[in-house]
Length: 97
Image 1 (cartoon, rainbow, N blue to C red):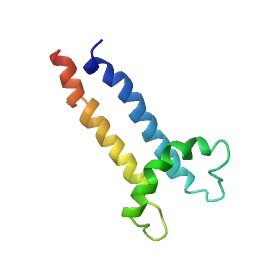
Image 2: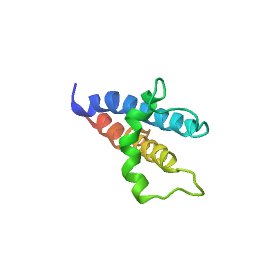
Image 3: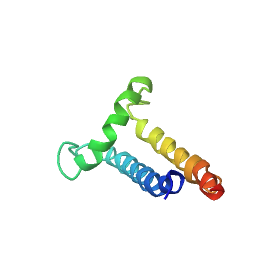
Image 4: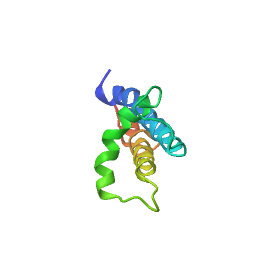
């Protein structure tokens, strides 16, 4: 199996999982009493926090609301569509080979 055929099988689940984790992270912001350092919440915080920290330095909170998880949902959704969508780069590349 070539890289072009293997990439969707690897990237698809990773991008989908990260999108799901960021959506869950958005839901957790509705519950400020949730301790992100304790199970099961740290299972969501641990993989998402490295993405959020640098973006928080660039994008300020709006009215006290951290919008960086929303931005990451958009980024991962866009990447998934550009790479793996019906007209995605990797999808078209795998059809050529």
